[in-house]
Image (tube, rainbow, N blue to C red; front, side, top):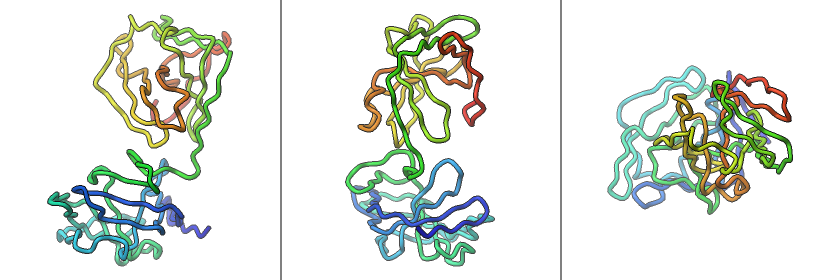
Length: 247
């Protein structure tokens, strides 16, 4: 696989067919997208200009500069009567030669994204991220400010590349009298949409996926807590709090 890097930005081709919709219509459809890691956590898709609906793009006159990608010409995207201002970037003279002649769409400005025929949410999937969910008989206990809020001998442990192991616990093993449901929702391309609870005044410490995506269905309805923000005892031993972007 041909991979190009500049600074922290990495570029490599993908073999997936990727489509983007706006206003109920396809604005880009390619079987030769580029995966571009603009941030370390996940990639975004760049589309060959030939695979983008030409009439959907209109230069806005603005330019966004990136130290690694150069000057990006900002475009408004119009499709199906819907206008998304500043939703696309083109880098005609980028120092990263691979992305010249390609179009980058702002993910949340589009209506829908598909990898092959499966809709993808929040951001592109990272081909180097793996999610494994394993049943366990280990004793997991969760404390917040010295108070036990969950205690289970039937956790499922989710191992995701680059993140600490997450312990997902059955709801009967969680003290919901100490939890308060919030309006927060987050979206993950590997797991789906999560709902959240605050605990003892600490916002959004716990979450659950009611209807996770198929590859993560084993955690449906289970509850997990941020290892970074609570005390987790595993088989009686206090676990060190990991340092991550969620800490």
